[in-house]
Length: 134
Image 1: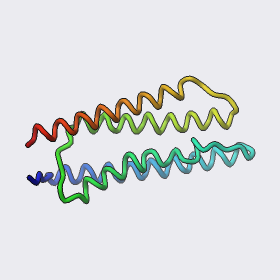
Image 2: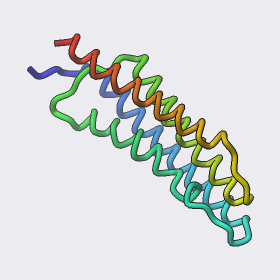
Image 3: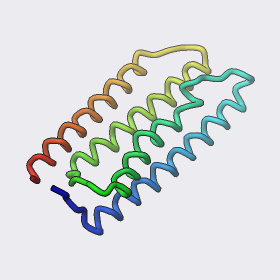
Image 4: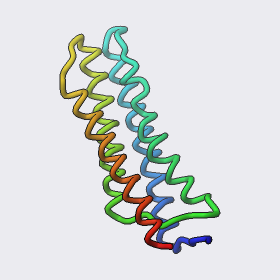
């Protein structure tokens, strides 16, 4: 069974992909500028923080746009997915800043756990909603 998406869903996914690419570029620029002024100290968390919104945000949105077989994604799942990606991105930048500064924090683990939980809930909810649509 092939489920089709409406024109609104397509525009929503294209908009999300563009937004995630813009966020990835902004995070990459922030990381480059921050590390430029850090006197040669760098952090892999900061260097690759741009990859989180790119891989977990833009790539899935583009896959939903270009895929021939699609499924409906509820609004609450989209919002939870966006929040999970944001938590992981902010957590990566936060951990990078602390690593460059030379310290650590327990909050780094909280960002990762919160982001992972939000992504998992969004994915499970999307899968269950696709079964209901059939």
